[in-house]
View 1: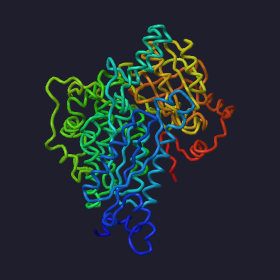
View 2 (view 1 turned 120 degrees about the vertical axis):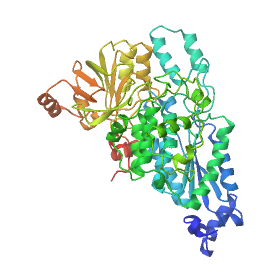
View 3 (view 1 turned 180 degrees about the horizontal axis):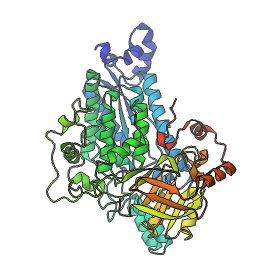
View 4 (view 1 turned 135 degrees about the vertical axis):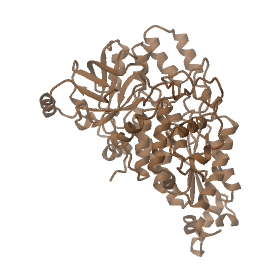
Length: 557
């Protein structure tokens, strides 16, 4: 086969001088004819540390089959993952967002070192999915992403968020020990990513809308036969992309990211999508900012009645056709760029031309004339509390404005203790600070505290502010990613108990009701609290990471 299809692998295996390389590859299964084929790396995030990824080895094997059947040679390798659901609320959660960078680095390292001509990445949990896209953008070799798929619902339509909120109900005495154990034991029945429109399903949908996965790849259950078929087809697709010399940056244009943002909003997706899409865009050399989310949010309604803010699970959206019919509806309304290229080798519009529509009478996806919310639930807020921006998730059910007195905690642990002890009351603005990218370090998710608040029945009575992140499962009146973060002396560091805080999702403002003079006075006397002098990966991350408003990346020049 021509070296045009083997731009990278030919340098590894061609010529007398590369006999040692070929000898090593023969030991892992290469035969004579394989040295003349394009080599495709299959990056598997299989791991038994989380149900999200425990089945991905099977998907990787199916992908390998598809690659090999299409005339290329697959080489499988693994990378890591960290389970948010397991590490949540502990110091271990500091490693979650850090793992995104480690995974991207590790995929780049293997593909670059081994000289693969193409790449298929398979992700199943929150951080390994954007990490896969970041690596693909950096490497810019023909690539396809495969989503591991969504979990089946637990007993009584429960999921992992049900367990977190049950903790709050238990602390209020609303459920018994036995009831808590029953929820714990039945909410997560097997493989797959968390079953609402949480971060994993949000990012899978965004990636599909971006054109980097096959049509409806994002709307398949983890254990379904169609998921295995999707993996095989992805393996075949990457060979076609190699032949076409169609690379990720040809697909991941500014318009492609706008499609992804529109899809995230229409689905009522996670705040984490803001952080991750900006990070992916950075690696793809696309200029994407918080202001793009605000601009697109003004014209894009929330149409999906999906958990956590809504009523339905991803498995139920899958039953009615997934997101392809929604994409068709949005394209017809001019909310998507139909001329964007995708990994099928066709444009988005071409992929949708013969697509199905939703069945009559379905209640999950609303009509444009009757949306869940007429514009975005993701609000980009600015003000004297967030000069560089913050990301709010406000569905409208909790109201669009909030004003209350600050109740300040300097860590997630102390805040959780205060919530469980009943120290947070109606009208409070709960602030958890020093949890940003540098302050954590690692920008922990606050699912434990927000779920406890919901479990205590305070979801619409308390506002929640942090320079950390929120889980895709979080709902309520919440504002995260506040920048600059407290650790770097941002205004959040200057807030005192009792200060009046106002949040307005109509004007997109977040402010503390003290004078500029008082802010300056507090800043002069502020001292950064001593944090652990981290070594290893956390130390490297703290020294390199940008603010949340820039995607919390570690590759910014």
